[in-house]
Length: 132
Image (cartoon, rainbow, N blue to C red; front, side, top):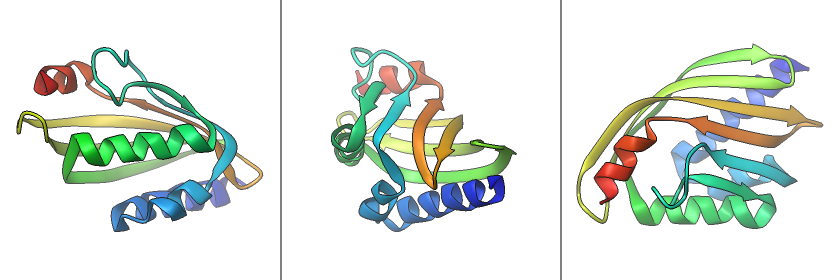
């Protein structure tokens, strides 16, 4: 089952890369826990969002706040019902025009062919500084 989980997660990144957010959202469970670790008061994309209302809100805000320069998943680690992805990103913060570049780690929990949990770890201080 875990090979299918890695394939699902790869497909979600491919959808994101094409700008097909609807296809990405279709791979999430109705009660998905979507989290970018950090405090929302430091940067609007940080914090927890839940369900089919929270995840679309995240992607809407993402497109409003950041402009993608590079977003590259590099390594997919199969841990059964958890898939860990390591990658690199570069963004331009729309509000200030400042660049941000860092490495990230994404954790996906998959059950019954849907992502039930997403958690991102990145250099949140860099994003907060660039946003101010």
